Amino acid sequence: MKVLKFGGTSVGKPERMHSVAKLISSPDPKIVVLSAVSGTTNALVDISNKLSNKDSKGAEEAIANLFGPYKSFVDELYSTEAGKAKGHAIVKTYHDLIRSYVGKADFGDKETRLFLAQGEIISTNLFQEYLVEQGYSSALLPALDFMKTDADSEPMLDYIETKLNEQLAKFPNKHLYITQGYVCLNSDGEVDNLKRGGSDYTATLIGAALRMEEIQIWTDIDGMHNNDPRIVKRTFPIPEISFDEAAELAYFGAKILHPTCIRPAQVRKVPVRLLNTMQPEQKGTVINNTPSDRDITAIAAKDGITAIKIKSSRMLLAHGFLRKVFEIFENYKTSVDMITTSEVAVSLTIDDAKNLDQIVKELKEFSIVEVDMDQTIICVVGNFGKEKTGIGKRLFDAMETIPVRMISYGGSSSNISILINGGNKNEALNALNEKLFFHAEKV
Image (tube, rainbow, N blue to C red; front, side):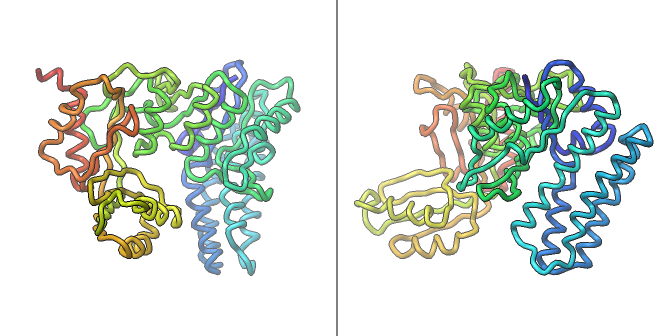
């Protein structure tokens, strides 16, 4: 069995839902995970914000703007009057549910989480009815019946495995199952979600829980590229990449897969294939446990980084100094991306500056602090084992005209990270791309 996930752009128009139906029409057993129709979740966030702020008129307008286009969507999706009637009834059900909250006295986080689940519930119900209209033998599996997180908001993989098998057992004669991405129950039994990137996460959790043959993530991009094609002049898709490399790239800026999604598949050794809905004939990228034999695989960039230099009035390695530094970041639940040290100072980076003022205030109680905003981490991923030679020279040759703020190497055998000013990102990505991937052409 395989699990196939289709994102918001893949189901964002009726004709794309038609294409998805064709892609999943083979008789082999599969679970299909769908995101909300593109734009729906953002609209639901906007409606929730307006209701939280007691803006009933604004919420009414936003609800009308969200559900208005669904009329033509339904009319184009279905080919029969019976199908259209069922589609309009689905849309009305969830329109009425959302609208019923207008004017209510209390609208908080619990109601917002309920709202954000409706996008996937609408898209899967519409798609399931389309499959029925077209004669497919399929079943709808509500994600709320098997997807759950614990008190730490971590998915409960054993629970998911048990409950999902119970749901599948209800439809022994089916080979095609449809379910919602993103949606889950929390430890209190309330409707919740797996946060952004959640539909990918749903797919990898399902694939891992059932130890499936393969997890397929279908998007509008032709696999994972060696660099950012929006910025770099010439890039190419990567046919195969290891889980460790993919995790580094995802964390440091590659947009095709959310970092949290990789772990379940890696733990259960289920390969993940990234495919393009618009070009289904392409092979895409396979992520698996096979170590890469390439020196350099890909490059990614992470923006919005803040660099903090902390200089001690005493020796850096004086007892307790580093402990005091990191306790402050831990107290404010702020993760550190990069870290370098010298005899009297430590420099580190964070990507969440929400509590920066408080952090700096506490650090200044025992050190001198310098802060640089708007930095970018360039992540170069490959096979950087200790026996490798020459990689550093190629990397720094490419960066010879770009000021480097920090370097992190050695913590991982598959990642070299370089911190630069954000304004130099485009130049750095293009220079590294040419030097690291196309240098042989110029020799």
